[in-house]
Image 1 (tube, rainbow, N blue to C red):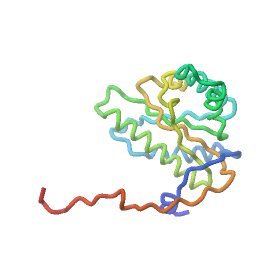
Image 2: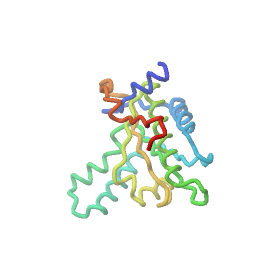
Image 3: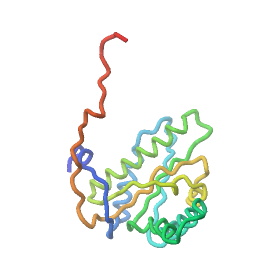
Length: 190
């Protein structure tokens, strides 16, 4: 598949099942991810890989923190939150480990991690896997950040859910591209 076809044809995965990417395929995706733009070469990205029981542990924690944030939550709501990491056979948490000592603004470090997540998703698509980018309140919860080795100042930019698409996703819908583009005039008038 040509690179431009991958970039213009990528869609998010859904109903993700086994097989998940193997170690070599995951290595390829991570290799693409770390080629993201990185102002100051801080390499702020962190990738926390969860398979098997690790997804269940994250799910339990997500359920507990959801209940803490929402004390009136029903058991069904807590269970729904706890089951999220089980939506796919592999979860990769993409984070920005913020270098507070750098003169590079934190937002640029976070954007670099976001670009790494996108590179990862494009590589997953190119290798034939489904990948869905999710966040939600769990991405901002300090207890969850701590559990995956981050500080409150760090940022989880994505929970990437990976696997094989149970049903091939529909091709992306055509967008009215120029609804999102502004041409700045090339003359000198204000």
